[in-house]
Length: 242
Ligand SMILES: N[C@@H](CCC(=O)N[C@@H](CS)C(=O)NCC(=O)O)C(=O)O
Image (tube, helix red, strand yellow):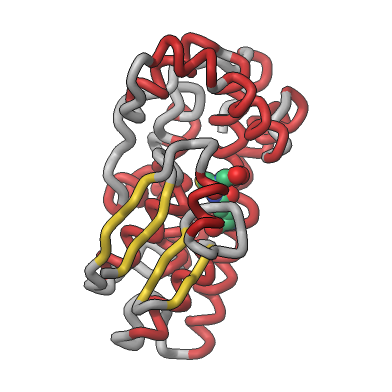
């Protein structure tokens, strides 16, 4: 059986799952406990320490960009990338941009929030199914702090993300308007970008910037909503009408 390794709430892991579904690839999703995932990944002989990680037809594939290509190579041709080379280049570029620019935004905000807010940490861990969430929230403090550091999530970077969000969302809306994403047959860039947008829609802080845009429609059409919302925590002066 093909296996997709993930951690709870990981948006690129959700992208990988949706792409496998789109291509009709039977698979099982295995969620590792947050923080222990590097140990589990190493035990399964994956070279890197991040999810999504996939065993597809016996081969190890790690990272959402490698996974979309492996699924496309398995076929049917055109399931995640256009067959026309110029159109494929546009989708690949949008996908790369989504992975490098958009994907880190909800990750940084999530890790910064988890590290700095014990009450939210408790709620999120409870939603992730951890027993004794009060104790788990205390035990997890050093782990989420390390997570925040590894994603370079701090006041300065989160503030800069908030200020730059409008421009990123403009680019998503432009990609939809030009037809690179948002068409009737979702491609790899659709899944890469829409899952980051769905993760953003799980933050009360970000909803007002996104909810009335074509970007929000794309996320709602392609990605199941996250369970519950992370309460607003970003200082008022950091958010800009986007
Ligand atoms: N850009 C990579 C990054 C994946 C990534 O950073 N995943 C996070 C979860 S959303 C992760 O595994 N983090 C674990 C860690 O940083 O140790 C991709 O698209 O696969």
